[in-house]
Image (cartoon, rainbow, N blue to C red; front, side):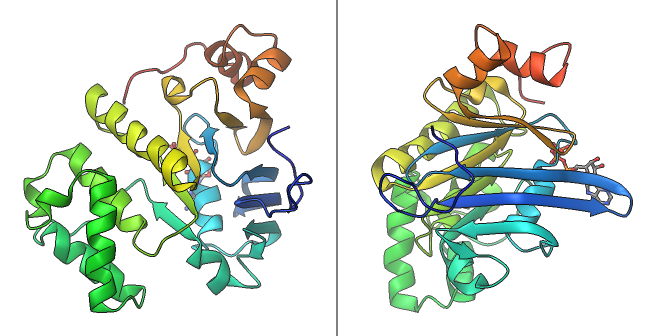
Length: 262
Ligand SMILES: Nc1ncnc2c1ncn2[C@@H]1O[C@H](COP(=O)(O)OP(=O)(O)OP(=O)(O)O)[C@@H](O)[C@H]1O
């Protein structure tokens, strides 16, 4: 079973890359998350699948401590984000939905600024920059202004930036929104490569069913509730559906599945 609601993997005793346990969140009287629990294994690609308003961004805000977790617990490699935020967040990289690069600076300047924020010294920052830009095949563009990049290239730079402090767990909130099909496939391939090559655990939030592969783990979130979790085969079979697209439609009651970028 891929998803368990305990901190350690029973086989290896290794902590989960991400452990979300009984997490709820409300905005005033509106319940955005209702007792959500799931885990992401180290070195695995997990898809947080949910339509608009499912609660994906709210969950990310809680994991990254933008909001305090008032009910339930969130742990990154066993470190509670509330109790030991330094240890927990040091192991976490994040690519938010909104673009956050400074368009008037070069790629290198954007990354240097971020490295400084993380307390990475100048020499180490240069080495890390080279390495992370190579991972997304942007090393030859380091001096280019961000304004001159395509949307997909900007995303790749944001992924590189999120890797500067060597996180072991990466969160991406709808990272392909607004990109064309080629750029979407490209970003997905780069992030899947990070899982395979670097052993990073990934939680990829999306409403686009065609971003899910049969070997992935999925967490299906709908209107703040976790409808199912597990590998694609298990979830489809429990839903009595031939594939994940049909299972998602069945579970969420959606009349159609959005496979195209918005
Ligand atoms: N700041 C806020 N104040 C009040 N309600 C909010 C706030 N942010 C989100 N919500 C509500 O909480 C619910 C979950 O929203 P959230 O943005 O987490 O979902 P999402 O899955 O990320 O959706 P999307 O794909 O549209 O970004 C929605 O009903 C939304 O209207």
